[in-house]
Image 1: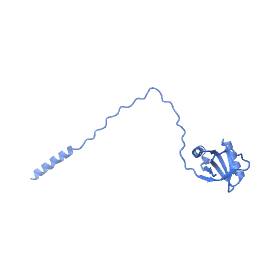
Image 2: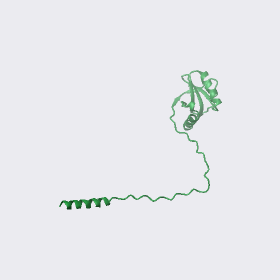
Image 3: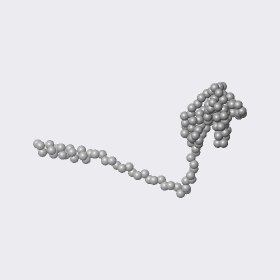
Image 4: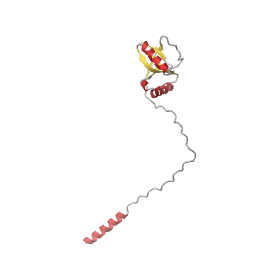
Length: 149
């Protein structure tokens, strides 16, 4: 009887071992051949990553000696903020040398804000902030001033 049990056990083992599914390797796909025409190097369009931009809404006016040349623009890229006008003027000179068109404004608390650019659309101002931060790492702390009506 013992031999018979061993025999059936052996047959069961052989049957189970033979029932494994076999993995079939996928057929290789044909490789597309490159065209004879060379591919031109096309530069990728300049992309600026979206950045978090601090913003503040306040009332202000053009500082002493400045020309009101922003019209109805409401969004201002602030490059620096000072309590002393002479410090704001020094930054304005630096920005002018770097091809910005700066303007100094003064808020109701007497702070001088040095504006690098101003816009009528918030999205344009935010895009400019991202661009400046990318091109001028030293101005990474610039922020958005929104003119309060």
